[in-house]
Picture 1 (cartoon, rainbow, N blue to C red):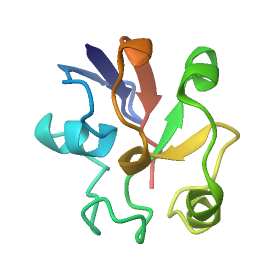
Picture 2: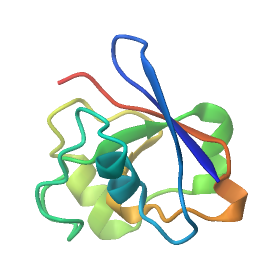
Picture 3: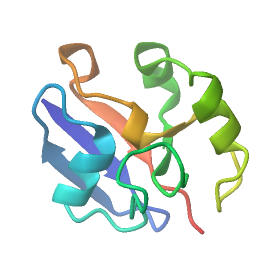
Picture 4: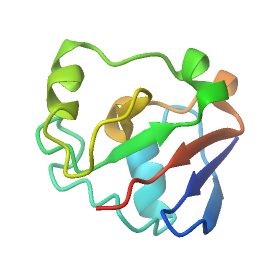
Length: 104
């Protein structure tokens, strides 16, 4: 299954990702800059902030309450389709998903 991250400068990084892998872990494995994931995926740092492409947001879904709170403290401004990539697990329905890495 494929994920594509778009960096602030327009560069795209694509990677094959196994089912069940968080998109934060996938970003780290693919050396995607701007997603340090400082807390290790424990929903306590908001450093894995991404913006889900408009046409993928329905499939990805919105944040749960704790993630929603954490999105208010991200370094880059929150956008309508912001998510923390540590909270998104790869699945067949997300094959081809596109994410923007916000500039900080």
